[in-house]
Length: 327
Length: 207
Image (cartoon, rainbow over all chains, first blue to last red):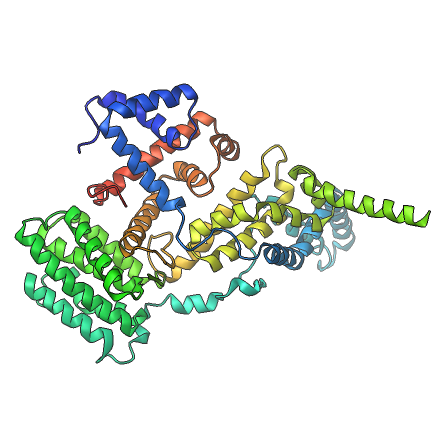
């Protein structure tokens, strides 16, 4: 599947059109032209498919999550009360100031001048007074649509449904190592065992062979422990066992060195887990498992692209975000 | 006689309510600016789905999206005097929402880590494979979008997150429609390259 295709010039010209075609922003003639080209050009079909993948990654529906406020009447009320509290005062002031700006400024300047003249021989406490009024004006005047100063987070009233308060989130943002209350039991132990099992099959990682390997040896235990339940411990263990079995099959078939076969492997294993256990699979456990599989693949193939994907999964796992489960 | 007057009054009230509901956005905006703050609620009702959807796409979290959506409406209210009634209100508030959402996420991520502008979200999927694969590719795509050159990035975001039409984007950004078109094409090619360098696309497309 090489890109771009044979008629490179035609295809490159086509890219502009394909993008608009995807957005439904082509004229009927352009649409017909794109259709005709796509019928004959494999490379451009692949490109279009990838554009779609990118599109879906951003705007695709997330299962189980309708993209609308739960209670729209309550939402509107909450907005209005925030506007009345936070917005009303400054805006009314801003509006009055806007109307009166020229007059107020002129009066202020005049007053300053008069006072300055009048008080000249003495120290000048009074003349400074109008100045703040003038400076208060300008931020309002300058406020631009995109850069409107956000209301301070602390002060704003939250909708009752708006659950998580900022401080809670701040605490959660810390790596979830804190939760590893019993390091001897649970995930910590299992993960370490599993890492060493895996390493035994590939190469001993403890000797500082690479930063990444060392990192995983210590890191995987921590990361999982934080968010994990006993259930996800056993899931990871189970996933690993099955993965090892399938991997052995793939290796004997000489197929492990590709991302394709890895995806098949992962898909296969996770699907089987979902089938057999009947219980929800913890997302963090699955992601951890996924990352570890990449690490194995990276050792075998030395593909640098895999390293960047490992780092990304690490980043995902470091955040507290992926939570929940699939059923 | 009295009852007739009463009926007339009721009709007038109904007519007044109706007229707010059927009034074009720009009239409501004018009313709000003239001091009828409460009329703004009608705009909230009209655009809350759209605003929430954008907020959700960026934050990937319902609570965060609710906060961001509220914030966007408050910002819009405060900036209302800058709103150009010639432009569609929906596009205008979409852009405000996008800015509010990304500001929110960058604050959120400062507590977490690095260059990722946002992170995945709660997942409930029927299929574990696609859920994990989706988290991976979505994170990769978001990071790649964040890495786009400034000019084409905003155009791409207005399209991808806010679903604005080419004409609306052209209006909002202040460039010709043709420029919008070529920026989007450049953005997509760039994203495709970046993702392919990371190994996406070598595997099956069925992600």
